[in-house]
Image 1 (tube, rainbow, N blue to C red):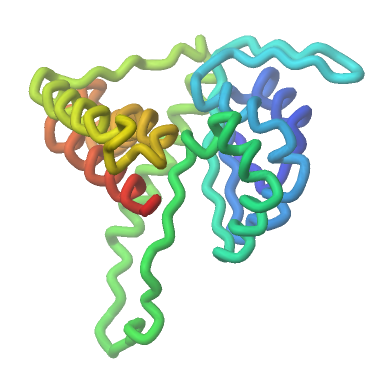
Image 2: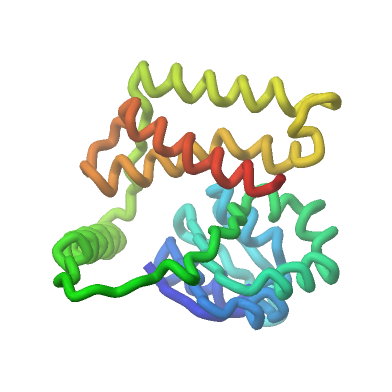
Length: 231
């Protein structure tokens, strides 16, 4: 996968079309990304989220991807910078459906409780995590060198019922008098978000292509956390 900190839409399209079908845009100081060229064409990011094969016209060439592409983002920034972006481009981000696809959260601060002691720090869990990440990155690279076919994951029967119950609950709360009416655009995507998260957790933990009930519930819990962040 391509790991990027800042990129123009044209450069991203070209890289996804010709180099790797997946890219990650990561930044711990994302103000420049929000205000720069990366977010100039939000519809392009929406298409990658939806799994559409992009085709873009530029001044110099027509870019057509050879495969279905994916883009993920992990952006960290101060609340004031996010509010500034919302004031400047929030209406476009909402109307285009970009905000509906974004998981936005503000974890509680741990300042004042980050004590250190003399006990030996445990690094074994981190080493296991990093080894698994490397394994998955190598798997993705080898797949690109081969036929670049993606595996299809599905929930088992119990996981499917649990997801359906969650989806229907969200739908019942999204009507004009429901408590999710004001965030119905985001709520309309939360079922799919839960399914995607469950799939990621399942494959990361077990490499199985069938999502079990426990991982589905974990995906639902995480998605519900981000839903509650809107209130």
